[in-house]
Image (cartoon, rainbow, N blue to C red; front, side, top):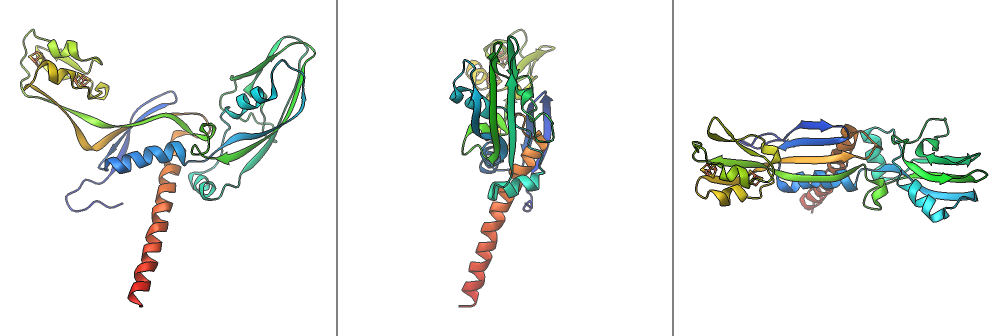
Length: 275
Ligand code: SF4
Ligand code: SF4
């Protein structure tokens, strides 16, 4: 995308990363584009998930449906580049077989670490997820197939969860000198405002939820608005992909879809000219 004259070029930067949780700043885009990126990240980026379970043996206390459901929600490592992920969005190809084979000689918990790829590597980034508990003498053997799919089909394929895109807050303070008054600071439920040397300041703009409680506490002095083209994209990666690959795949899938429409429009324009 290129910026038109006088318009800021779109940009993306990392605001924070805490464990698997990310906050990114997307600047210079419309609300429609920011939301398209969020939706593509949730629903279009394909990942591997267990999609078929054939039970050869199960004398545990758990129903096959229960075990299959738990297995399907374990994030399976999807070691593909963003281009390969985009290829798999348009034509899912990847499929991996696994066997879960456990015999118990005492009370035990079966963890996700028992799920192994054919090369022996643990198949998940969350090996401590418990699947079932077993007692002495019980056995479980399940032949599994993991397939590529997207969050549009089922949440088990979503590479991220809790994905939100909110406008970046803009809080205008018309009069900073407030003395001992801190009515709006007390009214703010998130601690976004604070008094520094008797002056009202926005001390944590990202904590602001645009609730307008401060504006109501001091009308005419505080004004809560938001930047129309600046957004905070927050999400948590589920474990199949790293955040960078998931985001690049989302953008590549959007890009390929739009390029496809563009090339069809070019054909239409050519046909019109040659009429
Ligand atoms: S902005 Fe208004 S409510 Fe807030 S501290 Fe100043 S005078 Fe008090
Ligand atoms: S809009 Fe709400 S969250 Fe934001 S600073 Fe004002 S009171 Fe706090």
